[in-house]
Image 1 (tube, rainbow, N blue to C red):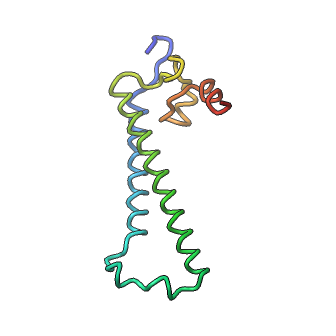
Image 2 (image 1 turned 45 degrees about the vertical axis):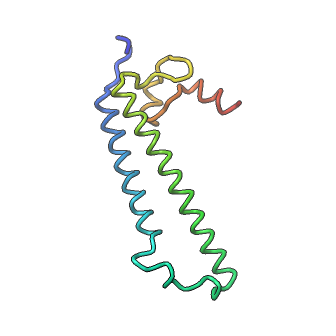
Image 3 (image 1 turned 90 degrees about the vertical axis):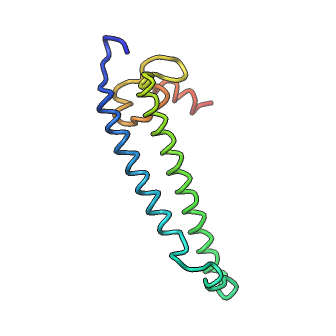
Length: 125
């Protein structure tokens, strides 16, 4: 890090670790809500007895939970990656251009991998 720009790595590490714990808790809650709750799958009422609207709702809820789980895992990977960058001494450096990521961006998005300019370029591409 340059002398002109000092960021508190301990602060960002603490923010990222807190975010990691929230994500893990949300993942546990999602898993708990979507598991069979101790029932044998063969004991669960057959979907063939349900009305088509009920089946559609069950399918929608399963797909929604799957998507939410995928998003939680992706966010967890980003947070873990940011924590590894702190350990490696590369935290806060844009992976595209190599410049420092603005402190304001890191305050808003501690797991940011790109500076705002590179992020905008990526989104326009």
